[in-house]
Amino acid sequence: MDIRQNWTKTEVLSLFELPFNQLMFRAQTAHRQHFDPSEVQASTLMSIKTGACPEDCKYCPQSVRYDTGLEREALVALDDVLAAAEAARQGGATRFCMGAAWRQPKDRDLDAVIAMVQGVRDLGMETCLTLGMLSRGQAERLKDAGLDYYNHNLDTSPEHYPEIISTRTYDDRLDTLRNVREAGMKVCCGGIVGMGETRADRAGLLLELANLPEQPQSVPINNLVQVPGTPLDGTAPLDPLEFVRTIAVARVMMPASVVRLSAGRTEMSDELQALCFLAGANSLFYGDKLLTTGNPEAERDRALLERLGLRMSTASVSGPVSPA
Ligand code: SAM
Ligand code: DTB
Ligand code: SF4
Image (cartoon, rainbow, N blue to C red):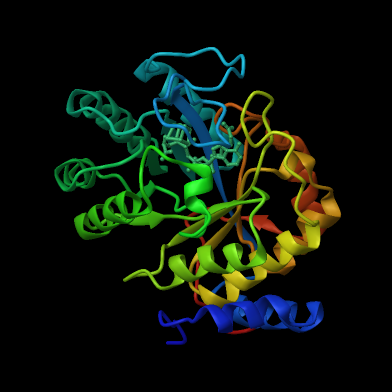
């Protein structure tokens, strides 16, 4: 297998520095060794508990510390979750991802969330949760309930991290990822770019992800959605071609992982998204909303995929396939 988990920062930076066409070729080559390059996996997100989060993540509209005008909502009722999941399934999504603005779930919260996981599974969809930190016991409860994926992002490089979040450490995040992994669930773990970080920080994030004891099965790359009221609103936007490079380097370093073109697509042209797919992205969030902010309308995404000759996978993305 060509999966390496001993990358050095120098190597990662040299990937970023490749001439654009060379980098795209490397990414395409890696992509085709593990996946059908015409297939894209679609996940739909739902916020099951919104706002009033005690953490201070500077990008996030849901932190209680920033006045973003967001209305807080208690845990959503099971029937509403299942109705949204069924609509997502009918629209073509294969995975339903439920997010809660918690630092860490309370054990009694998990009872309600587990009923949601079981209900969504019964619809025939893959399930994903993102609830904040998890203890080993909580991870095991979710695994036993049949949860497929747990999303917990590293967000940025260890060096840049203290600029972004002070209420939980990088090591806290690594602990949660270990708990999820050791409980036997699939890990969805990525980060955010466009937060004023340097290229070395983007390289540092990808280095951490690729060198984890097991590479995450799913790697969401988010472009910061700037929300008025959050400290990062007004940050100078990232050069779009640097965003494409970040996707391509992620693809080269984590060739067997599904790389998701995640938040920030509303602000992207079709052409930029096409470059991201060319760079090896093979998943997206599908549906008019992310958690609290907008996402391209499903109709626009269907049209984009059709224009590009890409198809949504009907199960989890298949791979590996022989090069086309
Ligand atoms: N509270 C849980 C946590 O932080 O782990 C789960 C929900 S949290 C909203 C999930 C992820 O969304 C964050 O880790 C972050 O990477 C991403 N996110 C939040 N706000 C964002 C924004 N404005 N732009 C891009 N990504 C964002
Ligand atoms: C991830 O990496 N991106 C998603 C999902 N995992 C949970 C969340 C994006 C949130 C964007 C801001 C919002 O809509 O609140
Ligand atoms: Fe809370 Fe998650 Fe937002 Fe951080 S990213 S403030 S933990 S909801």
